[in-house]
Length: 605
Ligand code: ADP
Image (cartoon, rainbow, N blue to C red; front, side, top):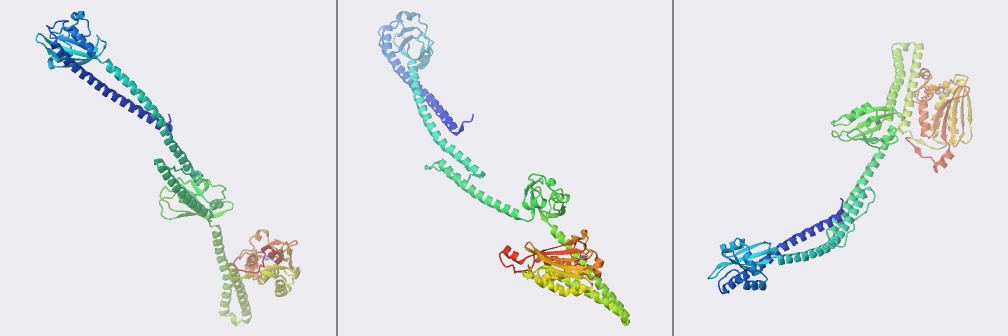
């Protein structure tokens, strides 16, 4: 049975009170009985001596019944039974018997008190008397008369003592019951008050304990009395304050860690000793293309990458272990997983870094170096071969010398174009080629391109068609714009066969200016269009080289246009040929979009 604090306190006090009452009752009864018996005994002692003295005063010889009258009176007076027993055990007188029965009374010589009195001068016994039907105390003392001797015995019923004791027992019981009732009431009150504080303490403590789940600020009421409970409540409140502070610090630290974790661009996965996922930040979800963190799932189910599983299962190593793998996505990414060394069987942290761009740039750099060396090597080896031939004697043959020198000059020019284009590209890419973006009319650059290339077009009998709307102003850099147009128109003239046509179109296009350079040349097959703007990419490398191309022109165009916040693409021209188009923000639109004059210089974009 569950009693609760109050019930337990009450039951304990009740048991204690009952136990104390029973013990004290038993003690009092024993002591009282002892005292009363001692009193009876003293009385019997005095009266037995008096009876013995009285016997000496009785005249005449002592016979059966001769002292009966005196003894009867004495017994009545003293409210005792007095028996005179001869040395042979005969009863001479007995205050409680009629004289005629004396002769028939059984011999009393063997009564224990009688034997004891004869032996030691006084005998005392207490026993149940069948004659009187009560507990009796007997005391016998010897007497000696000139004519006879014997024992005089006085006895007294102990029923008075018993009555007194039982009366006292009743009184005591009543007192105990009364005391018990008072004690019960007091105990109940005390236990009620004590347990009320305790129950309150317990309830508040529960509330404080549940503060961890949200309801902070619960405190125990500290009463005015400075008792133990108040002290306990005070300590408890102090502990709760401490707890609150710890919670606060912990939650701040947790928020900070979470914020750091969530703001990392690297994916972080925490694994428990069984390599199951216990933590995963947003970057990890993004990199792996997972919507919800699979907490508790084994890593092998989340990332089926053997190389990763191998480094995760390595134990006892002191250095970071890493593995690079391609995550199919989509989007497909190259990821580098690093596992930090952890104590054996401890949790592990896997950091995922997206190195797709890094690997792409590395590949681009390798390709670029290979392409650039290849491009440079060709004219250099042609020049050196021709110079060698000249040195070997061709110089003295004027007709051949001119041919070799011509080849040297062409390749030197090609080398120079290549180096210039490479320098331009590198300046644009590393940001040192600063563009000043400001409202620029496109008429200037278009005019400059015409001046520069019109004669070349005429040489090739290519018709030039210009359709440029008036007042077209873009936000851009005039020399960059000219560079873009020169490259595009130069290509158009270069790749268009003699007799064809090349054109420049410029017009408004929804807040932008659209510049198109078209030609009636061979066009670009669909499969090459996507890579057309890459460095050194050519549809027909041999033909391009023959025409003095470097393979860098369109790449420079793309960089310049993008730096001017524009786009460039190519589409096939209806009726044959290509259209390279550039879309740049129109000046008025740019102003209204940015709310300012967009004329700040731009460097690295
Ligand atoms: P290149 O110096 O070889 O002309 P570009 O980067 O200017 O290098 O052009 C890249 C390639 O794009 C060229 O090699 C050529 O194959 C193709 N191309 C460029 N412009 C045209 C065009 N107008 N018509 C057809 N093909 C073109």
